[in-house]
Image 1 (tube, rainbow, N blue to C red):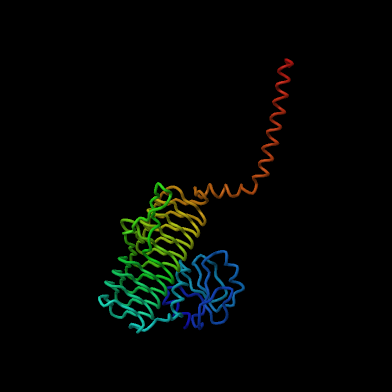
Image 2: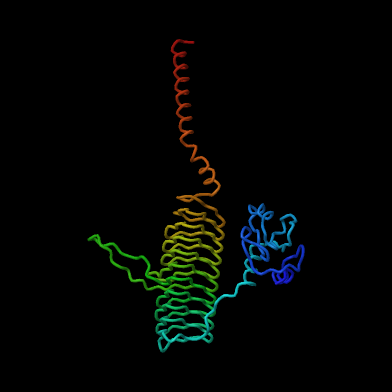
Length: 348
């Protein structure tokens, strides 16, 4: 595909030779002849001089370069869209594999594809053009919207609802029992029946081996457009707002409510019953034990305001040295105090 055609399809401004033939998209260090690469992070600008790519996607703020370029105010988004021009996903043919086990009263939408050994329970509703890969299990009364993709070994438990255009990666479990046990006087734990549902709204993607638990009462909700990475745990009764991003190994305890457009780094832990405001940012490995206001940026464990955390972490390696200085200063203060006291005693 000629670079000029790519520029038009990506709505980018072409700088340089538009007749360059592009055959694939590649990273800036791996790219070679016929490749289109990109730079969206300024720390990689120096790599432009050494790349062997035939062309490059750049932000409008990057100075002119020696190779043909596609200019845009959002190079990362342009890169994501460029990938789609060259990558053809492998989609299974519509239809039902003969080894799939489907309840007689299940409703299957037109154009759906159901793979080998999938199990569709009684009362399930599956929308149009849904792809269900091998070994997926839907418990009874599950609802799946249009144009969803459920990869192998996904399990959706009874009564849960999945919206339109949802992607569930391999091994996702939706609607497993929440972690609810009542302690008894004898020191044992009585299991609390988990009667709630999980609701997944439209355009959500959930990464591999992530779990979203049902609650004893009420719904656990993942709102429209949110993206959860691999190995995320969403506890019973929690709510994730619209367009949130949760990186790998995040744990959200029960009944915590996360607002919209919240960004959560990897291995963050949320205590239960918290409120996180819209647009908050929680950096990686933070432990949150308190509410976070809208727009707040927190770090550390326990998490606190990011700027203060950065100053604190800069001091940590110097603590032994600072402690010695404090002890030396205390010693000098005692010596000066003794001198003053001696002078006062002599009447000087």
